[in-house]
Image 1 (cartoon, each protein chain N blue to C red):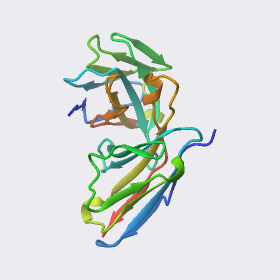
Image 2: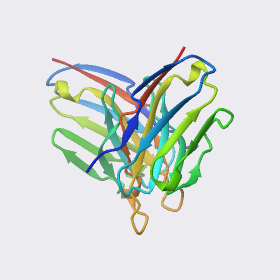
Image 3: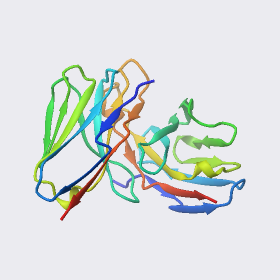
Length: 119
Length: 113
C-alpha cells in the first residue's frame, strides 16, 4: 500500500510571496488533514477534510491560508502572502473511515512533510 | 481546548538504559496514540490504547493508558540508538465528537551509543 505523498519536500521563498503544497492521501482514506509543525513542537491542525468537505478549519489563518480538496482525493494548501513565522514543516495526513466510528478512525498516516523556509 | 503535556521535553541517555516518558492531560480521551518522528519524516504510528488501564507491548516498548483515560506513559527497556526520535502522544476526542487528534508537546529522545 502506497503511503501519503507530498510535494515539494523543501521550499524556500521570500516573505510576501505565495506558495502551494500538494498532498495525495492513501487510497480509500476519506479524511485528510493538514498540520503545521514548528521545529521541536507537536503538529498543529490547520484543516480537516471529510471527502471534499471541510470538517474543521478553526485554526487556519484564513486571511492568508487556503486549502481545497477537489473530488475528495488530492489536496492543496496555499499560503499567500507568506510571513516569516510561517516557516515550518507542513504535514499532510489521512485516516480511514469505516462503517461505524471506532478508534481506528483516529489513526493517522502521515506524509514526509514539506519544509518551508520564509526569508 | 484539550491540552496534552509531555515530559520530559528532552531526554538523552546511554544505550542500554531504561526510560519512561509521560503524557498528561486534564481531559478524558476515547483513545490515545503514540507516534515516533524521525528527522525529515512525518510521524509514524506506534500504538493506540483505548481502555483505561490498558497496557500494550511492542518489543522493548511498553505503553500504558491511565485508568481515567487522561494520561499515558511509554517505557523503553534497554534503549537502542534506533529509538532516537521525537515521541508524540495524541489524544482522540470523545466518540460523539469530531474525529480530531490533539497532539502533545513531544519528547525528543537521544540514545547515545
